[in-house]
Image (cartoon, rainbow over all chains, first blue to last red):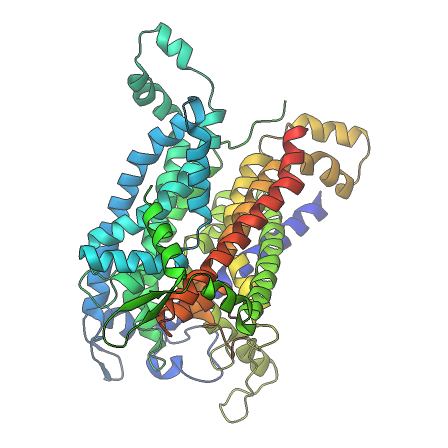
Length: 286
Length: 276
């Protein structure tokens, strides 16, 4: 028993290092003085914590203990604006996705109707289409409709990806829920109220996972955002961060802006892992 | 529904020659773009890179995911904390992961330079030597490793949910039969996981084939075009070289590859699972 717990502990250590090393390596840079951040070889940890980047990214100046002054980052406005836009986009995408996919995947899982297979195939097909190949058509369509550089356009684009993907994810989940519909009908529930009062509360883990997945997707979406809204007032946080990507002399600011984009996502992911363990996608072994 | 217009437009576009001289103009060229793609060495190179990238990504993501799931299943103390740490890579956007892996692997800022030089006691810039993990031979594998880092947590958590449904009784029986750890894993643990393994192999396969952001940020197809996957080639053709027609035609080959390999996986693996 002693030996197994020791090897488990070792395995856990390896897993933690594997998971955290890439994250740590960039995030440490935010707390290293700009001069040391570009030193070679790179420092292993911030031995003299330095908070210039953490202030500059929000548009505040910073004077350190040695009296050196650090001016606010020129992109701080974009980062804050991007944060605002990302929150708006992620919120609406999550809400609209849930409103569409809950009835949709429930219907797919429980009812037989004409054209069901064809519709299901269309959804699977949309999951398989790579975003790069719909990028150009959407780009041209959005120019015609005047949707480039708008939050609305970005929300629509995100929905074209979250809706099929999450419907696909949830069909199996709804199918495995116990068949309560006949019982509900005996008790006088209509189909709609069965869904609202019985099925949705029963499926809350699955729906929570769906909400979190669509939130994370919209929060992190990068390819469409760079092409459709980059450089406009509707730019989201990922595109604002990408403004730092090629600014090599200031990795501290890049790192600080990554902190901003990672913290909300990490909190959301924390709730995700608690819910996945509760939902059961496959039938239990009999 | 919403996909119909872009797909229709893409089909139309793939048969056009787009020119920008004197305004946006297109002329019908039929299957010319499709033929041009097949005769181009760049296209076949990208197919090769894509296949390698996807194979390595899927195998690594599934193995690491399975390993993490088993670990979380067996750990008693601190499981909540371990879970909170393990899910992290999945919450990080692909561009963020791209930045991270680039910093980690590059010679100038990388962890290899930092550790090796410190161990050898060379801590000043003029004595230290650069060790870069990025090379044209290994870049595809490195990208796949980063991609697996990002995908494995999701696989792990769904496998964990599934592991919890295996009755404890079966493990007691295995103890009676005096199975060793490896036999117990093969006979008791693995069979009930098969369906989830199949579903997530398909999901990681499709997601890796569609991947662009991570590659775009981390290596931008380079060095040279050593890591130019099909998605990167499409993006490059359309948005840098403005060769929309050829890019659209290639995107259909990519789509066929994605659907074809997903179907192949279903016929050779998924269908057998439904029979049993």
